[in-house]
Length: 341
Ligand code: DAH
Image (tube, rainbow, N blue to C red; front, side):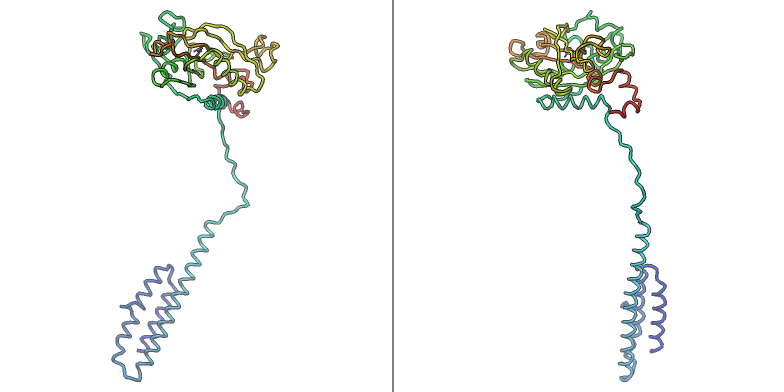
């Protein structure tokens, strides 16, 4: 039996030394020290021994058990350390290597201007609306008091989808006024930015696609003074305190009275220069008091309610805001241009 125990010990030590994973160690523990293990098997035969031999073998068996248990622990620690070492090696991070610079883009200058405009209006309690670029002529024209025969309805002016001129690319954001009147509760305060389309040739101030920001207020006792006050505040916030505006009479079918608003030229301060074509002023938007017929068509009583509206050219606003001389730069997306903002 002594030899048997000695053999088990030698074999087990060799096997433990060769183990590569802690699961192997566990398997060996079961194999040698487990309930059905080899050492236990030997101990079960102790009954056959003489009374003198029993304690000797018993002690020896205990020693083997302790030795193997200790060895398993030692091996386990060793394997764990090796594993950690390997992991640290694999995950080593060299903090001295220079970092890679991530190129971060930024918003297009026109959208920077739009965000500023939206912020100003939201700050004054306006809601920002989004609406369709493909529009019914009914909303783009009829409901805005521009009846059949109005020059802006001409084929050479407008992109139509069908030969009956019913579906079109909106030529202005003004149909959003009608959508707001149809869907919102009074009083209404909205701005509606978006793309508009016209059959224009591209040049320094024209493009067949451009952006407008529509604005509208309808409530009781709204007057032209509210329109002027609001727009002056917006212009001062956009372009700086003391920026001068000028309101000129104009005609739009859906406003009465109508006007256009100019801003004093940022280049020459009003004296006249190439940027303002010698005028001293740059036109920024059309506006006016909403025509009673337009209110009536949307079921709003013009005897009780009144309102104002404006349509602002977004490219033009951005051009003034960032002192951009040519409209085409806004659409060409040359990064050398865009990186300047
Ligand atoms: N929709 C007009 C245009 O594109 C601009 C405009 C003028 C909008 C007067 C308005 C307004 O809301 O009241 O030329």
